[in-house]
Amino acid sequence: MRKALVPALGVMLALVAPANGAFAADSPDISVTNTKAHLDQFQSIATSNGGNRYTGRSGYKASADYVKAKLDAAGYTTTLQSFSTSAGTSYNVIAEWPHGDANHVVMAGSHLDSVSAGPGINDNGSGSAGVLETALAYAAGGQTPKNRLRFGFWGAEELGLLGSKYYMNNLPAADRAKIELYLNFDMIASPNPGYFVYDDNPAGNGARDDLVGYFAGKNVQTEFIDVQGRSDHAAFRSLGIPTAGTFSGAEEIKSSAQATKWGGTAGRAFDPCYHRSCDTISNLDLTSLDRQIDAIGHMIWTYAQKDYTGGPPPGGGNLLQNPGFESGATGWTGTTGVITSSTSRPAHSGSYKAWLQGNGRSSTENLSQAVTIPATAASAALSLWIRIDTAETTSSTAYDTVKVQVVDGTVTSTLATYSNLNKSAAYVQKTLDVSAYKGKTVTVKFVGQEDSSAQTSFVIDDVAVTAG
Image 1 (cartoon, rainbow, N blue to C red):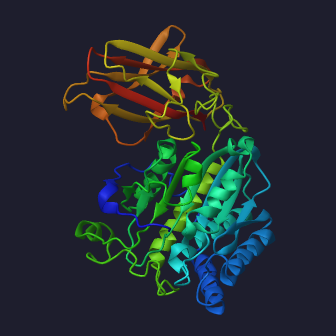
Image 2 (image 1 turned 180 degrees about the vertical axis):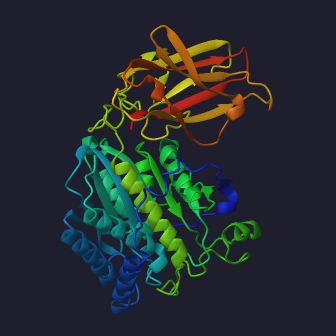
Image 3 (image 1 turned 90 degrees about the vertical axis):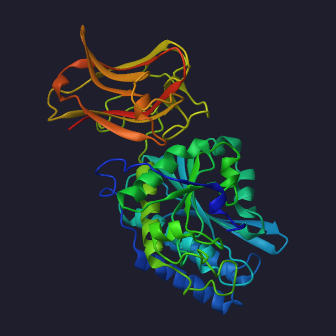
């Protein structure tokens, strides 16, 4: 990591709950043993090359060659991208899994270089090893991704994020537009670890919340941290691309409250060897590493299958068209302007969402789509992600509401009502039973209503009707 991050100046406690009961069970177990073996190799490379893996020196090139060889052998299409720096030639390793829709790219990355003072095993051998092992596990797992997966191992981060900037500056605009999400992992095995999730890009808040939800499902509390663009996601963030990531702490001091929450030692740095010669293979917390790499795997497996096309997935999974609103109003009818890419409220994923109300005056808005539920289904469910923020100060009166309804001919049934009393700092998933409508074509409808003052915003994303 290039600069110090100070959690005490920008931390919020992340309070989101696990997404659903299947969240953790569906996530891969990325091998910490294999990941540690990559770190052992980085240490061996540094030891054989002057004690570091610094840009422009032989240890860095050997690290890049090692990563590229592993990915080549796994079947990735790889590129060793060279560029000049004040310290000499550096390299990015870019690896693409040659399957999935090339118009929708999900990308993860980490910086591969160390500082000159030491081997950089936590900073950032840990992130690089974690991303590498996740990529290798995905290739070995026989997955068929909906989207194109790409992994970046950046050079010269310690000189000013030069590798990731070079990559994005030289990527044609049309190719930049295909990147749906970039995930960054920089220092994930600090010896006195914390569990921080990036919170510096509203476009990535959906992915941010998914990371928090994943950790919550493992009973690991997290804190938000405003990274302020001080790692390699900055080059993506500056172009409006959704970004998220994790961090286990650098030279900042762990507070007593953080030690109570996470264990470790209060009054001691998260990583006392940050940017020092002692950042060696002994400078790791393998529990943190294990948890963090599983989170990387969870995000890659999840977003590899996310529907960015606007249509129902093959195989009849989600019966709705354009369930994540990424194709605007396609498939939906209702109040003009409800479906929006405004950055004033985050999407759960992608850029678009349905934002009902938030007007601060008496008003009603609605959104709906017709859907046919097969008669042969054993069960059927309607699910949605919803985030509610409000200026109402009451804790007892539902002044503003959104209703989730099903219209069956002339009969309208309200399945659930949410109000200003259900406000949440992050998206929460709701699942409702619609088995009663098997064999029918019905209309799923959201109806928002506000009173005369104090806005409440009901933001809905990633809606699904599924038949089991």
